[in-house]
Length: 121
View (cartoon, rainbow, N blue to C red):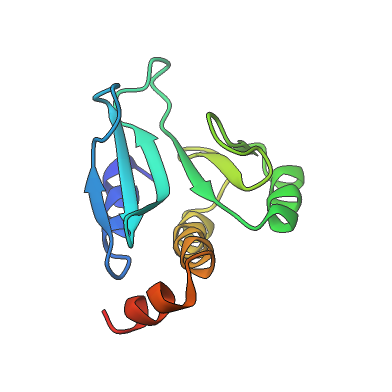
């Protein structure tokens, strides 16, 4: 998957926004309900695009065992976030699924009132 396709999938998530909120101006962040569900360095030093996405910890372990292109999250909780190399053995269809899964994981952790508000978007 290329970075533009990744970005398009992220912004297609219901209620998604994108911004550059960090000191590093190259980190593009995607949020739902003002909570981060994915981020990517748009100018990677090694030329390889790697996206970080929230993931169920049990599923994270299974994915890391199965795919070389999935590792623990960087600068995040290692158990709840994965780093996915976009151009790797990870199928594009799985990356698309993981984007949605990440947003769902974030929504599930919100207070019930905010979850209900998200449903109304």
